[in-house]
Length: 279
Image (cartoon, rainbow, N blue to C red; front, side, top):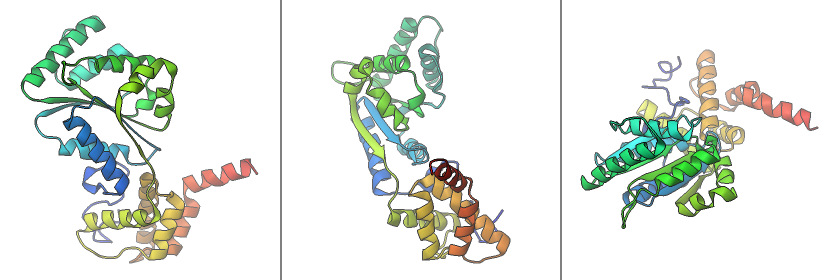
C-alpha cells in the first residue's frame, strides 16, 4: 500500500521469510556457515534453535539457495506426524518411487535410494522445521535414519530447526543416543542494537534500490527498544510505521510515528496486560 509513496520496488518488511533480504549478522552468518559446513562434510545431525521470529526459516531458505545440483533436499514443515507418516513425507519430497508398507520396508527402499545418490556423488539432506513439535518417539525414529551409513560416511544429513524447547526435549534421557549424534549445535540469539539498525537499513536498501534515508536515528532506537532485536518484531513494527507514515504523508519516519505504532501494537498491549496481571 505504501510502496509507491516511498518509491519502494517491493515491500521491505514482509513477515514471510525471503532469502533475498537475508541479513548477514554475525549470528545468522555463523548459523548459515555451520549448516553448509555440516552438509558438505557429511556430519550427520545438526540442531539450530532460536526464539520465535529469530530468523531460523530465513537462514533455511538462504541455505537452500546456496546448495548445488548435487544436493537432494527433503524439507518437512508439518511436524505433527507419526513416525511412519514422516517417513512417507520424506520419501515423497525426495520423489522416491516407493511402495507403502511396513516401516522396515520403506526404510529399506530409502536406504537403496541413498546408496544410489552416493554413487552419483550426490548428498541427501533432510531439513525439519519446527522440530520442537516432534514427539520423542518420532525423534528417536529420526535418529534411526542416521544409522543409514557406509563405513566412512553418513548417507543422509539431518538438520533440526526449532524453538528453544527443542533443546529441552533433546535432553530427555530416552533421547541420549540422538543427543550424542549431534555434531553441530547453534542457537540464534537476537540482534544487537547496532545490528538492528543495520538490519532495517539493509532491507530498505534492497527494497528501494537506493541509499535514501527513511528513518531518523531516534526512530531506529525505538525499533530496537520495542523488538529487542527479534527480526520478526522488527518487521512487524517497521511495516506498521511505514503504513502510518503513508497515511500521514510523512516523507521520513520519525520517533513520533514509531511511538504511535508501538503504543497501538498488539504485542505492546500484550506486554502491558501481563504487567498489570503480575502487578
